[in-house]
Length: 402
Image 1 (cartoon, one colour):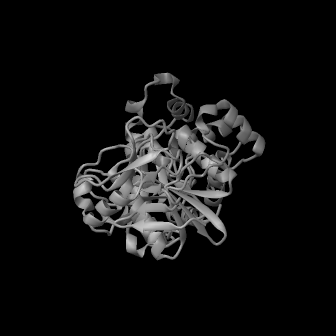
Image 2 (image 1 turned 135 degrees about the horizontal axis):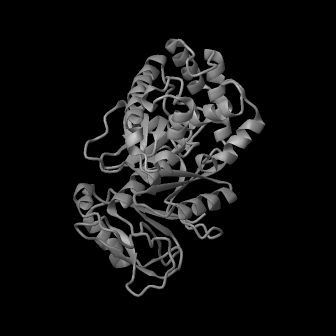
Image 3 (image 1 turned 30 degrees about the horizontal axis):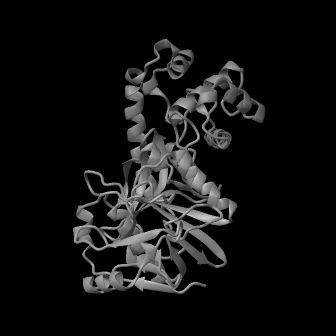
């Protein structure tokens, strides 16, 4: 194993962050003795000057000479020379936020006594993760993403890691909204790009973000999709010092917490249904409005069992109220009861409305919905039911492992 030199510089990152410009910023280099030099945060300025005077630095990937830049604005870093032909993996443009984030994570993992590398070049993949961790005979590639990248590029990197039995962990920079995120259950807006960072597990749908300036993580956990950018979620802040590896996960929602979800969901559902006619751009060709007409009911008067959250993932391209109403209309057209279910029927439904289905797991959502209707005894639009029983059924389904 190659020997490694760790270089630290003083903590003046608050000044560095002020100038968050992109560029060819590298934190690792090799010297003439092929030893790895890694820039971290706790060395005096004059020590960096001395290191630059006595050492020569080279890119671990292309072997070209590197410059060590030690300014008073940007975090000390290595950079290729102006006319470099390196096909390196820094073309997206580094920022000082990204540099600081990588350094903080690297130092944290070292404190946890993990085998961690900063910016290692994986020759077999031609990829360079921000960090590579070995833990319990497994390898993890940690990518701290501060900028928007094309989805295919993100998917390609993920596939590359998985082919080499490396588990990818994508961490998004904490979004800088107008108002800081407060702790607790609340309505959230998550853009399509940021939604790519949501992790779906048997227990939860969550997104973990990192704020280097505040040295804290922000968890957006137990995410329930409302359609488009909108979610209900539980926001929790965690300091870098309190973080572990594997990364900590959110606690299970209590029944009282789920009550808050339920009230927020009802408010959003009511708002959506009241505006649905105005939002339509298809007029009489709108499938949802045609379903309302077919079933002879106004959109804002749909019974509460239509539009209930039954999925932990985003399975449909429309909100729950839309696909569930279309499903019930489909059953009525076929002369079936609301509680009828068969694989063949789901298949026929998906063929009629192919643009509704985002993935194969949509079938499970239809089954979950059927389960709720059966237990409530729903047979028609006029069926009466107990809202408390509905809430208990949804909570049990919310906690169920998938």
